[in-house]
Image (cartoon, rainbow, N blue to C red; front, side, top):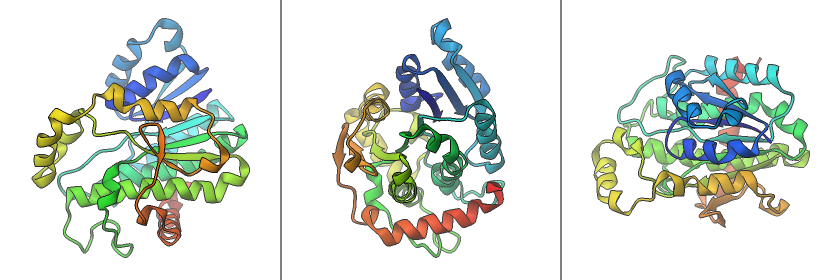
Length: 278
């Protein structure tokens, strides 16, 4: 298996990475911080360390996403599994250097571009998988497709996060629509409410919720189980595009099942990443 994974330096990404490395012939370790990447790789046995290539990638900087994809393309003609794991919640409204709202870029648009650029490698495999880490928070989404990036709406960290987690599921279903007949499989998942550093960036009501929920949270090892299950398991063709929870199919919100939303998001996202697609 040839694996590419984003956000493998901490939390469920690190647990997923460590569990899958022994099963892989090659792993592309896509992360912002080279020091954290080195620390994570040092935890592996020497044989597994040889399999891993660190590639710099910042989902809030689409130039780095394009460069990361190019490095993978230069290294291999096939990817068996792409895990779009990285993400976060951002307490205040910020623009990226590319002019996008930070949560939108870091949780959706960066992964959208990465996946599109790696489509030739994924399709070459004949049975590749894209796994998108979403969240049950998608059920709280309130999306205005005329204002996806809160330019004209008051920014809320939780609303922005809920929206992009919905986008993860819509994107998953669109991948099946556009590439399923060429063999590509795509899955979205809820990892559970995981006790990691994730909630430290929150503020307001979400920070309070995180504090109250902490005693009931699962650890990162438990949170990685569904990602690992999806990467390792050959699933029935009729489950392509599904949303998973606790390693089982789960029915997402009606918005997540909307073809209209799916098509709107795909069209808008393609338009936004067009400068990096050439």
